[in-house]
Image (tube, rainbow, N blue to C red; front, side, top):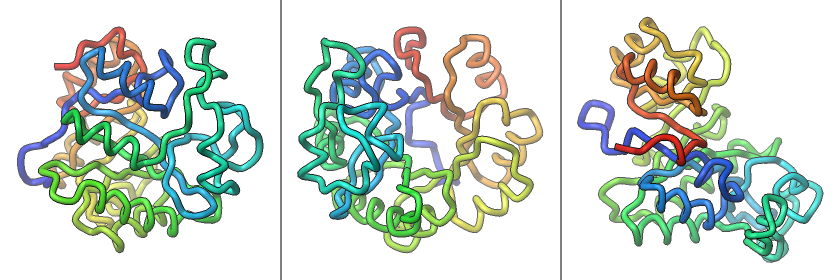
Length: 246
């Protein structure tokens, strides 16, 4: 995929609709779509019984009415949690979605997905394996599959082993001397960095290796313009109300 045309939109809505709706919920995806976004980023981890579901944090405390480690609960328990009331009364009762829910929404509407594999600590390789397997099944026959990304190398290794045909991307939040070698070893198609890590040298190195350059989380217009001038390939943003996706 890295050697051909990049099939994904440049503008990507972070966790559905950034901060305008409860993150990683179908409500957020729907709101992002109403703002014109056609690609979404979300965080996926595993329930205790191995169901991939959307949540960023290791614990339920911040974004649901529950408490404790999310991955220590069964999917039946997680599906009963309120994942919207913390955000605003408007979204009270919004449930946690599983990956199947999000896949159904994206495929029915022609949207694209960046799945960040977000393992519960201690389950990195297993989470990458199961999330990739389920994604491969859910997008079977799709012309454009989801992009699987992670900060965790073990998670990407699991994904590479279990679903080698799905595209992968290495996430970076701080400089790493071996970033290019790691991305190539994992047969990644992209590197997704905190926007401050991209400059002329790093973009040239990535593009020279056949890798695409994506940035998170870009909420300032001047930063977005800088990244566009660098000819990076994707911008992940919370500000679906500020940036009009082209």
